[in-house]
Image (tube, rainbow, N blue to C red; front, side, top):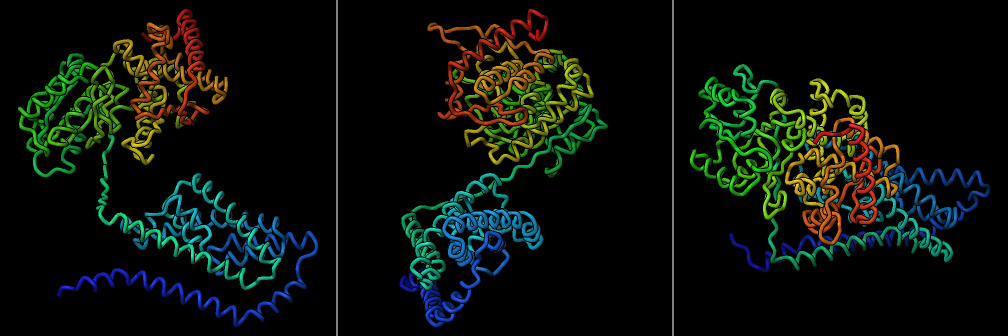
Length: 624
């Protein structure tokens, strides 16, 4: 049966009417109760005044009691507003302020810990964590934490909810501490005024009714915002990605089920696959193409190889528009649809190019990455970024597109030249510097073994580096880099410029090593990084065999400016206009700098050039 427009309008306004009705009734009850019981309460307080603390020890004991009541307000049925006013009345404005502030901060911390611990476990047991987006727990933010600090019941609820949601601890402590400082000041001022005027009823009404008025004002504001946005439709959805990073040996041995398992894990019927492989890899391992064909033949009919492996230009040559068009043509000629797989074998550049083609062909092909360089296995192959170079800009065109799986076969690294084996270790140094001090110390201890590419040490370095990269991508909350902070790009602003200046003579890892050394010296000059720590950074890079003084460091433009330092402005544009450069504050941690002192960076460049030249003269760090 259809309802009239008036009926629907009344139905929509009913919750608002009921809210105001409940507010009026609540206010009336509070006023009535204190009108009826004001004299008994005044008599009680007059009697209580006889027992007010007079000695410092008594005042300290009372202060501790009041702090405890405020701290345990989450679990005790004691109005924090009344306790706060009592603190001001008995201990004065200064003493009351300290008691209120300390008690509120301890209470916020206790509520957060309670929510993050017991209640979070309880909610998962009861299925409460599966609530739909849009409910209170999902709308809790910084503004909510601030606004709700003075609202009875909701103040305690908000900190518990923050703990249950894993609201970041440091921002939580900062926000609630500042809010508590302001709230304690307000209580102290209001309480002092009202106590001096002996306005008990007004004080109690202020502590209980004013927060309710605040809630009413928020409700009116939200209603106004909804009316303003009634012509706007809002849609929201979330996409979950799950891809394994598998470590194995001899991937294309027919007895190794790893590849088959990954291709058939979420696929019904035969998995149709087209293989793109780095042409340099196929040349260095001439039997590899045949092994791939034999593997698919051994696992038929579950796996179907659409054609023999197709060679893709090696290195940065693959990240070209013409190569991209050829990839599209090959996928179209072999009749690939969105349910087919593309298997990409190669270094980071090849994986970037093939990944971009897969991200855009049929709006997304199923992609399995098989990184074949150290750099790709511990970094480039793990991430979700794909792209090609265009208009003389590195990675100008690209897409965020996670692979269905990443498979690291250590045996594919044994055919690499020593220079490529070592170059990839720069990313391991990078992620250790910004995330894992213990890993950096381990690399210092194993530097000689890593420089020789001894297999046990190299395996561990690749595995730990991949683990740290994957942990950042999946756990930092910004896998598609919508913000400006990019700690994984430590040392990369200079590296990108050096690669371009060398016309890619420098490997990416070699350029990153130079960039990390340069930024370590800049951080040292700015007082962020100590002398000993900056020396450790440069010392490890030299022991691994990196040349930290390539000739590109000395290049100048027509106006005499360092061409390397011009990469800062290019990096700013790459980030979207705001510069965000990660710099070490200690080994294992970094901070983002949004401005770089060009003069200090120039001095760091000169220091690095002299250090690198000396190292080369002494026979150290001659990787190129």
